[in-house]
Length: 275
Picture (cartoon, rainbow, N blue to C red):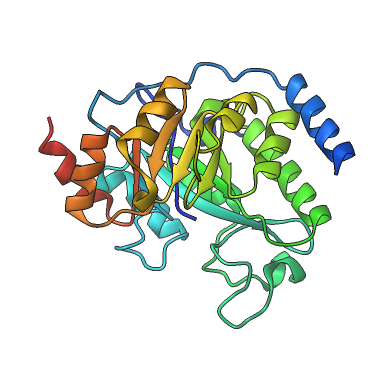
């Protein structure tokens, strides 16, 4: 990925404390009608002060990111949220990795957990390494439906055991995936990832009616009209992935709620100009 996060207020709760066809259309409409509305998200950022969301953790300092070291360093560099990506191994382990295949070409979904390289973390220790920061968990949409189904259940099961669902935002480029998260775990906030959101209302009515609270669009597809319409619909806007300070300034002026970046320390420095 690459996406938006829900604002949090106050100090974050440390995760470790909490752990111890037409037929298809009708089905989807029925499911959406059963979805509970999300609880009010904890908007904690000041106006004009977007959240700093560390893309794959502090990935510029600890490349390529999505490592324990990158997650642990994110808060030290000023981030209040972390974004990470998750896949499912052949034996059901939640693997934090951007691509569906490893550098050597082996598919994560075809490997047992024991064959995952040691520097690639599993989701539970990755959450612990975030040390209480908010976490945007992107569920990857690669693989067959049955694998995605198991991945969804595994993710919401782990997040649900935290006791603090508002600490998380689950996102995906697949609307079906985030709809399923809403159906199965309506207390976990969800958001839609996109490059461009299209024309007309840019899908905001669909996102809002599905009970989703966020959109995470590519920064190049964001304009004042989109931000205004999203906010009017009660949807927050998190831009990905932004490392250029001038682009960061432009996004602040547009009123985005979160900036996903590989350089959270630089982003914090830019935001200080607007204090």
